[in-house]
Length: 190
Image 1 (spheres, helix red, strand yellow):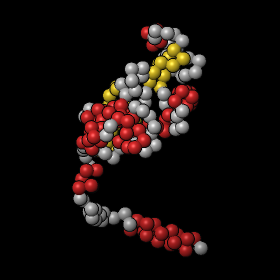
Image 2: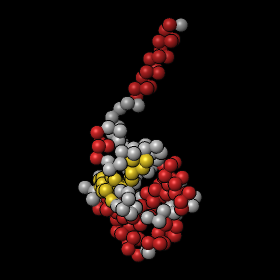
Image 3: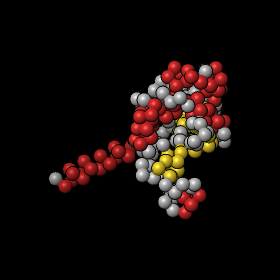
Image 4: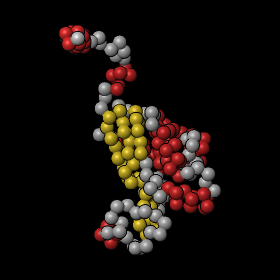
């Protein structure tokens, strides 16, 4: 019995080692432009932009660019909000806050405070789409476009047509400002 078990184990081990040889692998059949473009490095661009008027700032709007194509984008808008309803940026409750004009307000991310900020938009402007979903739709719209395509859209589309007619899923009146922020971040990619 021991000899049979040893023989079975030995044959199994030899069989498993047989597949470990140095056999050449076939080259990929597809080496066209799409595969070559995939080899281009992804570059990151970041800008701070006044995408939403004068009371907020899109800090650190980021675009990932491969060649001339935007392959990813991220937007967040910041403004001062009351401490009783908003969570401030890190250190808002420490030395960083010494520069705030009103200690009852903190610099806060609208994404982090989307429930509060979106509720405010619903009450004051009748918004039916959650705030962060609007930004997601704008990011999705820009992703996959080239820098020149996004420039053309912004140049050729009247501001009032951008929210609903151009960017499905976003009803923000400042869609043009957010798209411009992504475009400028894409241009800044190094």
